[in-house]
Image (tube, rainbow over all chains, first blue to last red):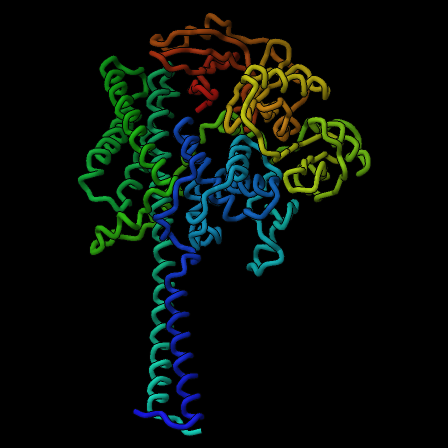
Amino acid sequence: MKITGLKERLGFVTALACLVLLIAGTVYYVFDFKMPGPFVPHLTPDAQLQSIAEASPESYMDNVNLLARVIMGEAGDEPYAGKVAVGAVLLNRMQSSAFPHTLSGVIFQPDAFESVSNGFIWYRQPTTQAIQAAIAALSGWDPTYGALYFWNPAKPVSPWIWTRQILTQIGQHVFAL
Amino acid sequence: MKASRSTVAIVALAILWGATAFWGISQIRAKRQADVLLQNKYSRAFYDTLQRTKNVEALLSKGLVSGSPDQMDALFSDLWYNANAAQENLNQLPVSHDVVAKTSKFLSQVGDYAYTLAKQNKDRSLSDKDWQTMQQLYQTAVSLNQEMSTVERAAATGAFHWTEIQSGLANKLPQGSISSVDNSFRQLETRLQELPVLVYDGPFSDHIDKIQPQGLTGGQVSLDQAKQIARGFADLGGAAVQQTVVAGNVKGKIPSYSLALRTGPGPQDTITVDVSKQGGHVVFMLNPRPVAAARLTDDQGRAQALNFLNSRGLTDFMPTYSLREQNVLTISFAYKQGDVVVYPDQIKLQVALDNGQVLGYEALGYLTSHHQRALPSPKVTVAQAQAKLSPRIQVLSERLAIIPTTSKGESLAYEFKTKLADETFLVYINAQSGEEEHILKLLNLPNGTLTL
């Protein structure tokens, strides 16, 4: 087919360009590794994390690792006290009769934590500070004084959670019973 | 403008492509979400199995050491429950049956064995034959746990994901709903997971909730007074406080001022100190500064911690357990009234082993339960108490202690440090009734001592 005339040529080129962009965009989006998910088989294990796992009693480090991952996911941008606080909330839930009684039960309870539900906890390796915070929480530090819930008041949450008794605020998170 | 046929074709193609891409991407998203959910379900089942089998190991070892039929009944009930839970969770994992068959069988057998013993054990203590059987089960449990821990370390460092194993069995989805498994456990009483960290108030944690704090002596303090107290209390490591900011107000069982002491511009230069409104007691302190390589030994770290406590007016404390992790030493201190160790009055410290600075302080337990106690004199002598122990264990030392009981009270007990083969246990005999109250297993490790 012959293309004659400037307007037709322009139309053709524009359409072609749009198509190419569309295809390129889709390909980029589909293969963009920034999407969260457990598809990170190329993640190299954090060397320090590995050496901690070797040197310590297994039963303790499983819990530290798991707790540190959730702390990273939920309070990665929070100050240190906020990280310890999130860890403490998980441990408080374990002891409460209204929640599962194992740490993994509390963490993987469906829809309890956003970073667990969307897979973020598997995506990033915990930082040294997150591990330290997990150890402090497991050792008994509780900046929330027994809180069972926490949320960011600036983000949309269910109205029910506002009926809980608020104990304190640390960083961006509000902690409640 | 008149479009040529090629342009129309291209536009049509683009629209078609767009629609297909839109559908494809939403499918990919849905699949990824489902994968994450599945990964989480499997992880939960795996970590639960791990924890339950560790409990089985610990309970078996305590069963070997206990001298009281009543205590053993309780242990066997716990053992039965934990073995059951371990086995059910194990069978949820996406690994082929022949891999887990032996483990599953072992766990069932332990559970059945414990159940039978619990039913029969009313008047007699463990026969020699039963004791031998329990020893063998215990050895198997130990090696099982070691293998599972290897798997856990691989999972923790991201070496594999459950869904990758799953895709090898792509056609067979696990039968039944996975979430209904853990729901059914809520009804049972003996559910509490034991986290074996020295100071995780594991065995002694109940004293904290729902009780009015007894240790808050003194009158109300103002915000300025609280700021002064915080500045004087914290171990600044030679730095100067540039700014004291009120980070929050705590309205919990101990109303407090939450203060942030800034010694520098970064987030790691902020020391958080909570000071109670009544009495101006420091509830906790946290310093997140990064710690360099260790230059102090554990003993030196403990000495620094004791110095810190003494200089802040907290005398009469003795270190009970400690754990070194990432160049930070976490130490648990118990108050000592005379010769008696008062476990509920607990303070924990964290010492940086690069320069001895105290980074962490935690006194919620202490402020909740500390008061001058009128200690009764024991009705049971040491010799009588020692006679109550199992004849199979060897006593290393003993002392008197106040321990919290499960009904949120306290009792005076003899604490016997005992040994069986090469494992150490603490056995508590009530000093008034002579009954065996509690058994704790001590794990002596290169970086610390934990209790289970």
